[in-house]
Every structure is written in C-alpha cells, then in structure tokens.
Amino acid sequence: MFLAIANHKGGVGKTTSTLALGGLLAESDPCLLIDLDPQANLTTGLGVELPEQSPGVYHWLIGHLPAAQVIQKTASGIYLIPADAHLTRAEMELLQKSGAFYTLRDRLTGLQRQFRYVLIDCPPSRGVLTINALAAADYVLIPVQCQFFALKGLTALLETVQHVQRRLNPKLKILGVLPTMAELQTIMTQDVMSALKNQPEFHVFPPIPKSVKFPESNLAGEPIHRYTNDPRLLTPLRELVKYIKNIQQQAQQ
Ligand SMILES: Nc1ncnc2c1ncn2[C@@H]1O[C@H](COP(=O)(O)OP(=O)(O)O)[C@@H](O)[C@H]1O
Ligand SMILES: [Mg+2]
Image (cartoon, rainbow, N blue to C red; front, side, top):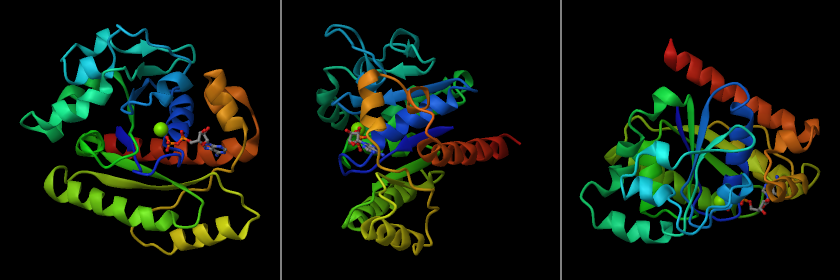
C-alpha cells in the first residue's frame, strides 16, 4: 500500500504521524518511509544524519539512482529514503520535466514487492512534490491539528485531492482524517472533533492527544511506541494501524 500523509499546513503532525505509523507497521511488516520534505524532519526523527554528499531522495527521484542505493535501514528496523540537501531544487526541476506529476509513481514501480507499506511524508505545501505523492498513492491520510480554523485549511486540501482524483489518479482514496495534538478536555478540541465528525466525506480516526512525549521521541530518534508505553498515546495509534492493516488485507483478497 502506498500511503501519502499530507496537509499543506505545516506543524499539524504529518511527520510525527508518519514516524508513529511507520514504527508500529514495521513491527510486523517491511515498511518504507519516504521523506519528501526538504526540512528533513522525518529523517532526523529516525536518528539519521545524511552527510552532505550522500545520495538521498533527490538522487533517487530526479537522478534515477536505484532505490537500493538510497534506502537506509534505521536502528528501529524501519526503512527510510532520507531527504537530502538537494531536495529544495526538486520542485523546479520536476516542473521542467514532461510527466512532472508522475515522477514519484514511476520511481515507486516494483517497490511494493519489497515493502508491504510505503509511507510518504509530504512537505507543507500543495506544490509539485505533494502532487507527486498524491498521484502515486493508493490512500491519503490527513493529519489535522485540533485548532480553530483547522477545517478551513482542510477544505482547500480536499479540493486538491479531488483534483488529483479527477485528473491524475482515479484510484486515490482518502483513508481518513487524523486529529492531532488533541486536548480532549478543552472546548476547542471538542468543537473540532464534532465539526470533523459532521463531514460525511471522510472517516475520522480517534484523536492523538497532545503530549511532550512526541517531540521528545523525535529528539531521541525513536518511534513513539519504543519511547513510551503510555496507552493514551498508543491506543489511538494502534487503532489506526489496525484499520490500515485491515484495508491492506482486504485489498489482497
Ligand atoms: N500529539 C502531539 N503532541 C505534542 N506535540 C506534537 C504532537 N504531534 C506533533 N507534535 C509536535 O509538533 C511539531 C510539528 O509536528 P510535525 O509532525 O513536525 O508536523 P508537520 O510534519 O505537519 O509539519 C513537532 O515539534 C512535533 O514534535
Ligand atoms: Mg513534516
């Protein structure tokens, strides 16, 4: 399954969700994470530091280096295509290519034989890298921060998803919306949750609570389930993982 984790807003929990899901999925299945964000938070969040001259996602995507030469196996058993310093150039260079929107999809061909799950952490924009991820993906997961105005941004993203479904990738489905940084006792979080649940066009997953354990585990370069066993944080994540595994199992039957 190719799963894009996307929201053009920054700081909503895309990378944190990718890390948490990747960690849990990798417990039972080979799982590849792709860092498509020049900020490289996913890469550092897995404790990987790419030396400046080392090839990463840019060289694989644009330079056509074989995946085997850029994939790293991290200490936690997750496979990663790390972001590199050149990725900032990728948007411009992709736009100059014909078939600009299908570059990632073409590069992913064959990788599903090796990895049951491929998770793509998108940059905070609706630019050509995010469009590439949506054009390649079977599903998109949309993390939404439990904040006022969260829904406004969501409408714009859903338009982009619909556009990609119509023009580029009719098989793209919305896996659902993942409420993040939830403070369950506050009116704000409760308002966002009920507004999300009123939208019929997507599934809403159990909210991920706000906790300092997430930034702490990022700093430690560890997936959240190896950093804490707090059930408040892990139960909603395990539910999401169960949902993903069910879908994958059904797709293979
Ligand atoms: N549930 C959470 N509780 C507390 N902090 C969180 C939570 N999820 C993410 N964060 C923190 O919020 C910041 C932004 O999250 P991140 O996943 O990097 O967002 P994005 O990838 O969408 O830009 C990071 O510092 C991250 O550690
Ligand atoms: Mg990010």
